[in-house]
Image 1 (cartoon, rainbow, N blue to C red):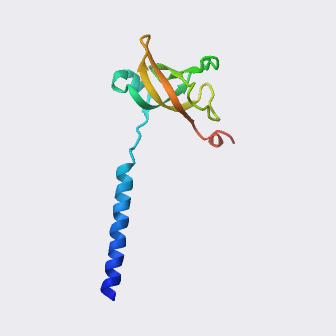
Image 2: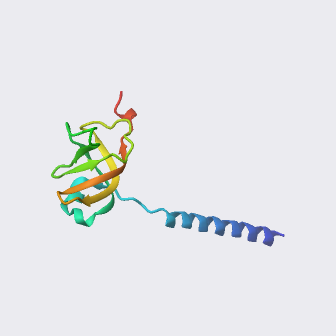
Image 3: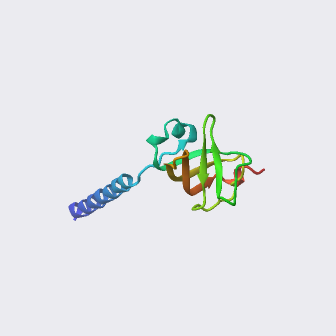
Length: 125
């Protein structure tokens, strides 16, 4: 009976190990890039991209659903018409944006599908 119990425990352990391995294999880590890194060679990042930058002061335009995301050296126009605006989205704040980076002929633009801000509670005292 001890052999049967040990074999069942071994089988359960193997199944758990397989499930954990499958979980790690199926999770695709999403790399978040800083805007300057992307805009140094935007053609390398064309398509789906997740980037971080600062909302340039005075550039949020609610009539066109756009703003400018800035880094140290580069800036990028963001179209947020397809994204929900989270709490804490303000000019001058650092945000993360997921979307489609594309060249529209006049330059590079990111069509955002998700905007993330930091936790507002960490900024308040």
